[in-house]
Image (tube, rainbow, N blue to C red; front, side):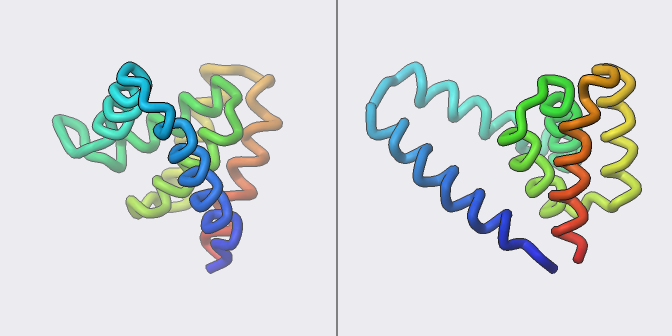
Length: 114
């Protein structure tokens, strides 16, 4: 498994999150906590929520968010077939503007399955 990009991404994300949190702003801390809690098990499994986050990130065209959700989906046991189903939903919802970001998601996903 080639997860070098994931390790580097996670390290940089952690470093930057610490920088933001060091500011001590209560509203930012609360938002980060809500974001983290949204993906916990509930009426929907975490795996489903991560796939929803991935599709949303593709439609919103946020490459950092795409990388984050690809990694988390992989950790949740998402199969290649499930990834491609989520990619398809994003493409249908977002249209052809999603294609460049779909390429990035596929590249990140394939690297994890190597």
